[in-house]
Length: 361
Image 1: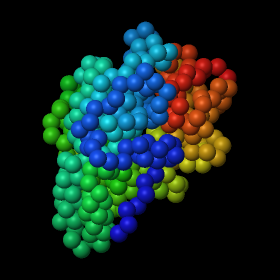
Image 2: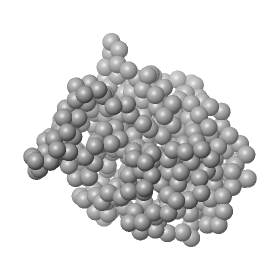
Image 3: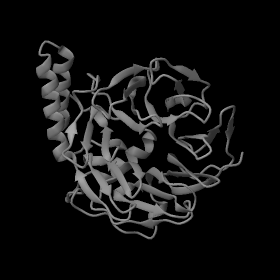
């Protein structure tokens, strides 16, 4: 079987990131990221925010293990030491804790607000967990051709070593108990609870085609939501124990999930060709919203006022409140990959690094 090419929000950016991380003579999983005075202008694929006002902290991540932290709303950035040289694709931060994921199945954690990082998992262990879960799924239904084919697909992809990327990470803390879920290419999904051992969720999620998971978000009502290829959405309301598959009716890739603007129920998902779908019942039913142009909508964020910003691949930022959309005038240079709220506006990351985008129309 030929290895299926993967899709991801900001496809051109991830291809560039992947090309920069292809293994050469050294193992990039054992090589630390290089410190650079120009790190904030490099290819950056992920942003996260924790806190509001003067205490807010922004974190950015991207090419060759770069992680940056800003305590002044994105005006200046400080690079953090990182133990791997692989491209990082997604972040989540809360309190003093933060998680980052990326190529070669890497999962990193920071316990000091993003200033230092340690590796929790990489594709070598992830491959073993994924294979065990695929075998469990097949063992539970040996007459199921989908399970057999999915197992063969997993075995074929693992021949490439720890190369499969992770594209999303989300974390939840309830009653002092923390759950972290990371997802990515070929149906990879891993969970850790309370800092314990990692497990694969491959056999818990209804994805017999091993479609790529492009992002995961924890919604304001406590649901983990995964978006994938073929317009599919997977929702868990019990910290990843069980998942319900939902079909938007769209056949293209979805790249992001965001809580609806203040005053509206539920959440939105967005993807290729300017598509946005809204649900008020955790994916039981869907309503398509007017398209925002024809380019992929690669990332989204919500600010303290409850507004939602969605950024297209070319950097055009659309902002919605409870009643209307507006398009911001400033557009960052290069292609966009991530967006996060800042005081009075937004910060966009992409092929030219990070850029501030004022919030006015």
